[in-house]
Image 1 (spheres, helix red, strand yellow):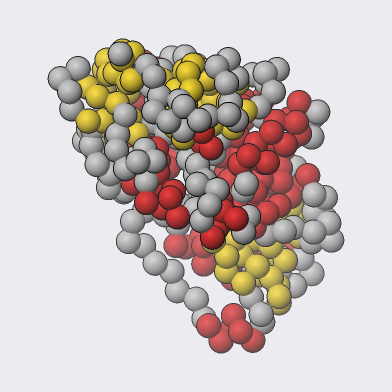
Image 2 (cartoon, one colour):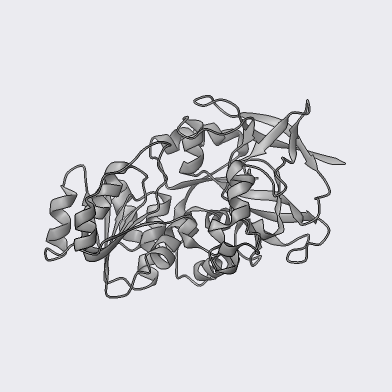
Length: 371
């Protein structure tokens, strides 16, 4: 038996997604969970695919930032049950490999083999078009449809009093940004933090730095509107890089020392290099932004060794979703982080292409599809 549902299907770069009827098994295989989606955020990572900067197999249902309700579970599933509210993670850990057992599930071997290739945990797809064609699910999630199927470890149960629109953002941008500050950079209360880029990930990196009590948080962006939002989320100083030279302004704000932590949340070689160049001796630059395929950066290795600088990659905020997702929801519901202000538009699935046109133009923070 199958369930027919509506989804936004991506087929060709720089072409609007089409709303199509597709199908999924009504009974999940062993170890998997059928989720009825309730909300999904529009993330810049999907935009990389839409504009042709990342190559993926097609047809594909994009989307990887979502929340919903468990509809059915397969044999052997014990961690979630029908009716549970869940946030999806695009790094569903196998819980057995070296990375998982050492506490780094975002680097899981099984994720690298399957989810990273937009497949289910057995290396197959679950969704079909009306004519029987296989449909891939972006990062193994495919949240731009009314249903999805994921491994049990890919559906993280959270408290039911969290609104789905806000909860969905924990599935990517909130965890990526907050985690980059807290988990990857390990920001300390006496440190000054620079965040380059004040989109969804950057604003959440600011929230993360504020949550742990960073002494000073400098936000850098090209837009005064985004910089005002950065102040709302916790920035103590802002730099409009269309008007000011970041390389000059950061020393002015730090008594000539530079910052202890710089978090790049855009995904451009120039801003990654700028983050690294802004560091004080012993500082660490964290790359949280996702770059288009094939781009590289240039750094001076003598300066790196002489000043003991660190350049660190941050995948999904170095998170442990099973622990971090419920904790972030608790932070939100207790007023310690703001998820409400991140949601600047709520739309139906039919409006998804308009939403991505706005994202290209830098309008709003996060648009969210409400199913």
